[in-house]
Length: 501
Image 1 (cartoon, rainbow, N blue to C red):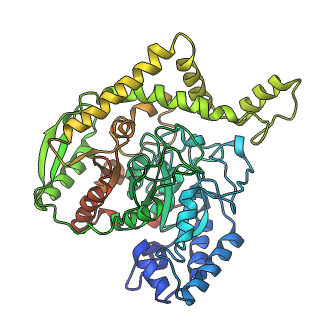
Image 2 (cartoon, rainbow, N blue to C red; image 1 turned 30 degrees about the horizontal axis):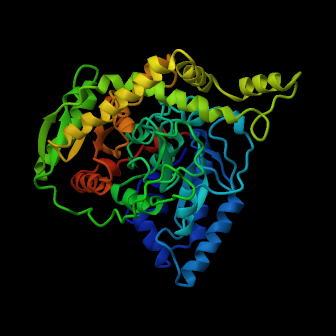
């Protein structure tokens, strides 16, 4: 069993207790080498393999990158992330590590190139620790849909860590990596961040390139960082974002931004909107209590709380679960056993090969969403379902714009409850309903983040959701950072007794 001293910092913090910002400074100052840092985190990842955070680790590849980082540091040409170990959600393709998207369909796949998000961080000196577990093709809210193993919440290993970026959240919460990448389609960065007590942000749709991200729902998928602090997320988001117009048609032609510049702005007079639909029936009392306490901290910091309405919140669930499966059915049609991906061993003809390869390669939830998506796009149902869902999606976006005439930032819970027990929500609909508070902003393409706000039932973390208007990531990160300066929830971590041996 890992010792408490190994997990909690004392007078001299262990490497895994340092934030990205602090670790990057130690590396630049020569107080620790990139190789030593990589070895430290590789050892931790291996010692906690039973948490299911990592799907692949290649020690030789990681140490080779670390050695190159040490040479750049010695030469005085270090990037802002030089030598910092970063692990990537296994939805981003990578040259040096296999990419599976959590699916047997892509078992053993090796990409000839790196995703833009991966390459941008590498250009700034980041060292890749490995690839992180996720729900298959990012479809899920608990990481129980991974084809390989479920990831376990380090705060209580009988509970889910959230999904689909569950392995990402586990890696940060258990101090197996200082920071990670995730993707958010309907809440898949924010919800696991909330359930595991870390900080995560989904930027405005189009801010981060989707090139090299295995597609689930193209009009919704967005990359973002997950770390312990808002300060770290600001540093990482600055590295990830920027135009990629030649390779991603959905990339915004907006210059890269230094999100660290406004972290210490005053919150005096900041109007925080509280949607009444986020605080009604269905929100558990323990989550409500933690959110209310966080909002009181904001009032102490000079912010003003304003009641607002997002009247079409409930419609976001049916709208999302029409649009996202429709796009998934189209995106996943390429996995047919011909050029890449799983191919059945035995088949009689081409059609039989398609059927058997897809039936064997895809898991139940992926098959379910493909069937739903194909149905709503089929002749006779496109107008009745898909077209109507797109119209309501526009109305949901308009609701936000109306709300932002009354407030600067929207706040509320990330999820109605804390993380639930493994297997407790075997009914797919129950999992879908847990996304009620994150889906609206995803449909609108707005930036949103989860900030640790306290503990709820069973001592499990609760996240406060902050939603901003388009391209207002700096405002969100500032609000989150100021809350973290006033509270210590982001510094709390699972006790050794909760981790597996």
